[in-house]
Structure formats: C-alpha cells, structure tokens
Length: 303
Image: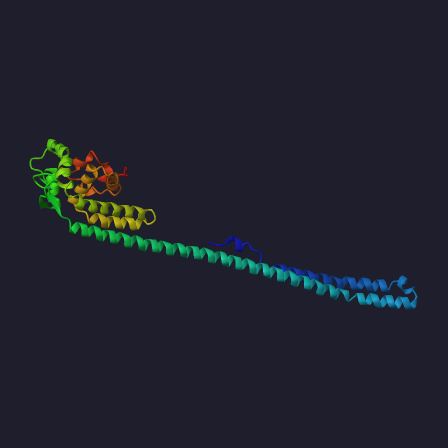
C-alpha cells in the first residue's frame, strides 16, 4: 500500500534550490539595472557641476558600492546554507523518529509472537500431560460390582458390565431383548438408583479422580479455545477419542446422580454424548436431563 504521507511530502532539495535561484536572480538584477542606475547618476549634469575633490571622493565611493551586490550574493548564499542545514537536521530527526517507531512496532510484534508461541507450548505440554494421566487412569480402572451395596466389596466388573447392569439391558449396551416404548421409558426410572448403589457408592476412589481428570482436561481445552480455537478443536478431538461409549454413559450418569453441574456443563459444551445420539435405548435415558446440544454438535450448547 502506498504511503500517502511520504508521497505528498515536499522534496528536501526544493527549498534550497529556490533560495539559491532567488539570490542569483537578485544579483543578476543588480548587475543589469543597478550598475547602470549608479553610472547614470555619476554622469548626470548635477554630478559634473560639483567641486572636483569631493566629486572624486564621492565617485570612488559610489564605484565601491557597485561591489555591494557581491556581498548581497554571499549573504544570500549564507542564508541558503543555514536554511539547508536546518532542513537537513529536521529531515534527519524525522527519519530517526520514524525508524524508532518502526522498531518499536516490530519489537511489540515479536514479543506478541514469542508470547503466543510460549503459551502454545505450555498449552500443549499441559494437555498431553493431562491426557497421559487420563490414559493411565483408564488403563488402571478397577471397578467392582456391589450387588449388596457398598458395605461389601463385590466382584470385579468391566465398564461395559457396569453400564449393562445400571441400565438393565439384558442384550448388552447395544441391544434390548423385546424392547418397546414402555421398557425404554422405564430405563431411567431405576438407572440412577442402580448407578449409585451398585457402582458409584463403592467406586468413588476410582471414578472420582477419573471423572475429575476428564473435567479438568476439557476445562483446559476451553481455556485454550479463548486464544487458539484451532488448537482447541484438535485437543477436543483427541480427548474425545479416549472416551468409549460406556465410559461416556458412566460420566453422564455420574454428573446427574451427584448433581455435578460443571461436569454436566462440560458434556453440553463439547457435545460428549454425540456418539450416543442415535442409540435407540440409551438416548431416552438422558434426554430428560441433558439439552439437545449434548447429542448434536450443530446445536448451540445450553449451560
């Protein structure tokens, strides 16, 4: 883009050139007209009738004054020199000031880039550290089935088995034997009660740190999204890939049973139940508790 300020700026050589030409013009006018005028005054009858001695002195003085034009020329040139020096000094100061301003802007831009790069590196390091912790917790997950309540430690159970028991799906998580509308509606009636007594009450020491890590991981992603949306989207995809469908069911039930609103807000903001959105028997369990944004990323989250 053209800098209009520089384009409209008066050239530095213009002023001294005009001054020099003006001084030469004055000197030329003096030579052409001033000398003739003085010579005419000396040759006039009035000058001829004057006494000899004084006339000679006066004539010599007038002839000497003819060289005053040269003095005027050098005086004008001196003025031009002073003006030129002042103009050059002003130009130098302006150029220096512009250079300092450009350097200041460039330094600020570099500082912003360095801060952004540093923040990005810190965000990535924190994310992958928390992701590694989540993976370790998932791999070491040790759930037990408390069929008689939390008083006695029950048999070890997988996440899929826990979800199957909570939702009372004889055909497993992805099927329902003889399912119908009444059975689907009845799922939620006992799901929370079974989740609390058979799984959550006796496994808080295991599920608590796990779900807290899930929440903090997505909370970190939300903070990154304020400055690096593209990086946050990549983090969110990686984090979601770590959570299986049964684990999402447990997380959603845990948020409801314990009335943990921050966890529920995370489910809405990141549409964590989207993989379960088309499931015939699981989605009705949560539809009364979660907004449609939990199942569909095209719906704005409601928290």
